[in-house]
Length: 70
Image 1: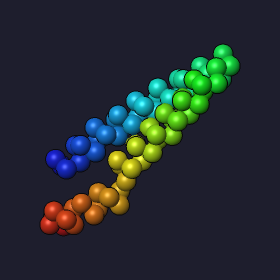
Image 2: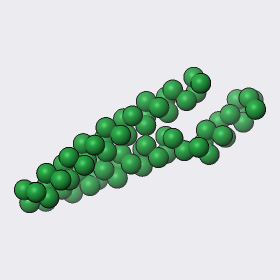
Image 3: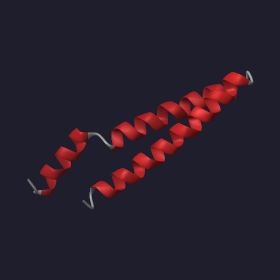
């Protein structure tokens, strides 16, 4: 279980980046602020990618094989 804890922390950070990006994207769309919209979309993509990569089940399976546990 200890090996999964850093992944959970990284996934949580990814979720918060995604939520911040979502806020700035919507705010940029509503008030027609192009730089805010663009950076919001970038943060949204980075947050989603971080979340998915951190909780990738294939990576967890490979790490168990490296540790020697079944």
